[in-house]
Image (cartoon, rainbow, N blue to C red; front, side):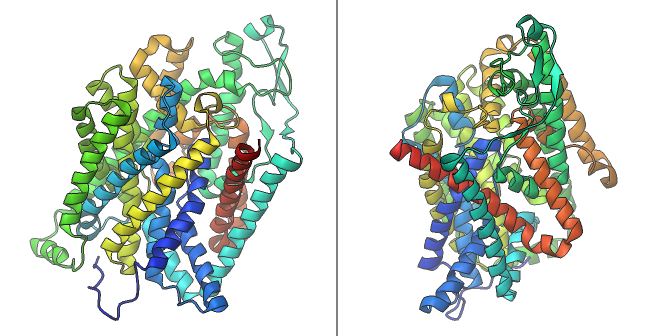
Length: 604
């Protein structure tokens, strides 16, 4: 892998004022989408390609309308880097440890403090990525699949400009449709959920309470008029969609009713139309979280083993080859940038933990140093597989700080927030660096763009979080805001703080079964031959369905199935437009949801 040549007077422009500002503006538009979807289903969307398409279309119009200078590919790369850095801000804790802390302790941060905290965590991740870039991209040539996909897409749209405009038109059209449906549902007429016409005869504890049957609506098996979930389903693919449906059936149609009958879980209002999510999820989240945690840690260990094996294989190259590869680097982020940046991040991280949460300086420094170590691991796994193990990183850091600061829930959550958040942000940034390397961008300009992107994401992401969930304790882990990542972090912190004794009845054996299922599925997925592993259900998706309303899992399955059918019937159209259409559905409803929250805040 060769580095870009040194800049000359004839080099195409890169870090121009308009490229940075465009990236910040597009990042500000896309960041709320990830905060919204993160609180809905715990997942986020990689915004690199969407940002590249949107900026290309905007400046193409600018060329024709007011004679703007052509929007170069390297300028677009800087824009895409800043925008994706902004949109990935949720890894800094906005949809996991920060609301979990509020729910457990009642402690919440004011907007200025929240902005500062999120920026510090994300800035640390950017700095670590700067330090890892040369080793992982130039020396080891790790693939970082998302970065390659973005680079290939950008080359394609610049080779076929009209194709990019068509993709943007599809994206915007899908976004308008999704946003329009959301706004109609919120402000014009409420679109009812379509209930499935079946019920389950009750028994045991339910019958003793006078409840003779449990309807499909009670368990959440309805069709929801949400195009966002359809869009997510199209993105995640059929295997994950089927896994979500399987998890919903196991959790809400079988295990949940059984727990109700045994008296382990409580029913909600005795009404065939009421959804009993709030009462049932308090029990179901324990086996679901156990499955997700064990599966994530097992997959992480297996992917790390594979990555280390690759590293040992690469180490067998001749010394001459290594020297040749090292000497290719004609352009790098200056070492002094990394040293100064890491020192600043260390000081800021310790001060922020001490000032905001009373975490002692030694523990705070350990969190920052551990961030560097785990970021190396997370980036390597992401570089090899394309999967950033943020969930696994969070659990590892929570377990680590349970040893360092036992029974201290604030230290457990927020020190782990620093480590896990920085590791996740670092891995995401490495994909941007990969894109830049393939396109011939200057890494120091990308690093600058990432800092501006993180600043934008901190300002906009924190505002979106405060706007959407002003009262996390009352609003989260509900049908409207399931917040599965919050439920996971909160559950782990509760166990580490109070032990297993405080759990609901029969939750411990349910957790053991969930953990066993997660272990078996993760092992099967990674160790089975490829022709069989693609049929193994995703343990993470099955476990996630335990803490989502069943209608979300059902909608995502429908979206995945539709995408699969479209791909079979019209492969060319699917390859060109399917992801753009799905991204539009996600972005449209997300932005409309944020706009609706703002309207309610301002006008009641």
